[in-house]
Image (tube, rainbow over all chains, first blue to last red; front, top):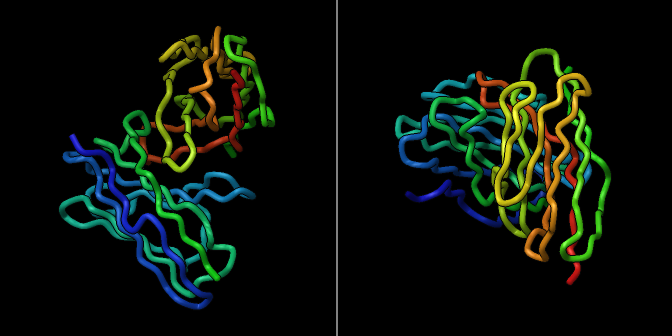
Length: 113
Length: 112
């Protein structure tokens, strides 16, 4: 069974631009969670989608948004990029949204110049 | 709110040494506890988990016991290998909501 896929793996943007990251969960998984990983703040939860509905949200500004499609694939969007948005963005998929079954992808490394 | 605190790294050990990475937590409910491992350039891999007090999680020679009385979930391994070099994250989560709260991570370096 294929694992969690994230595209692109690396991305370079400039301040003020917007970016869209994609996550394809493991086949059959209906939950996708997103995390931001930085050296200063560590791993922080962004949001979780289950069956196309946002079920939980972390403490991030409204510039960070996401969505989930009927095939469970998910995208997250960051608008008006800031230097501090440079991070590794990880997504995790799960069967029914419980934390016991979360499997992480390799991440997308975003650099904002 | 809920939080997880890990011992600071980096931790440097010789091959075959005993490993302990301390993890304590603060929780408003009754969470599950996890250890994840991150190898360079990769995402997180679930190492082990425990879902209730006194449960012991184990995998690949690593163990951790969910201690409610001391709010701890320390990671141990009897004999580390060079291939265990990675960053280890302690985390807690609840079954609804798919949200994990992570500690800051502990880098382990094992020398031959």
